[in-house]
View 1 (spheres, rainbow over the protein chains, first blue to last red):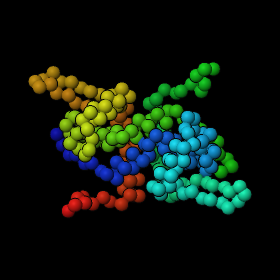
View 2: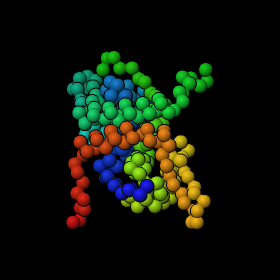
View 3: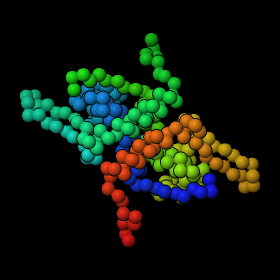
View 4: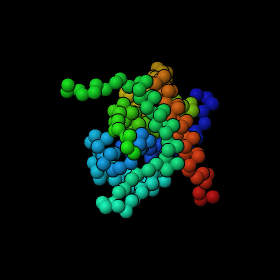
Length: 113
Length: 113
């Protein structure tokens, strides 16, 4: 392509690597759909370990995408809430979902059934 | 969130993990901007090794996102071209770029300058 000029964008690079990290995209999608508890996320995502889920939530918190709210009840209640910055990722999640549904074959609900 | 129902989507999951793999998002963006040669991609992306770039291009080819065209010239010419499926990822790349530019601070052109 004669007119091509390289244009590496560090902000784009760090964003897509944050969102694309193993399981992060799925966690974001469930948070956008209303999940807020660790157990809800853990139950919704097959094969993810609690250790990795906790790690990903910490990364999202550090990136300002998720806020961890602690309610001093008995037992203590902890909720994970998307910040405005996090909710603004809805467009990315929607575009990936659209692409996936358009280009990838449906997965049978229960392959063993 | 009382009304929350888990909804793990395997197609979404495999798509975001494909796109989000280390360097893949950046490679896609340069291909969408017109890069087509291995050297163009290698020069455009700081820190990527030729080995990893070749690996990522193979994965994208296997996923039907990129087509590898060989022109029997001397020396042989090889081009990497986005398929229709690949070009349809433009919406994802655009959304990530928009989010990144909105939420992440600009990176100084040359930190040492």
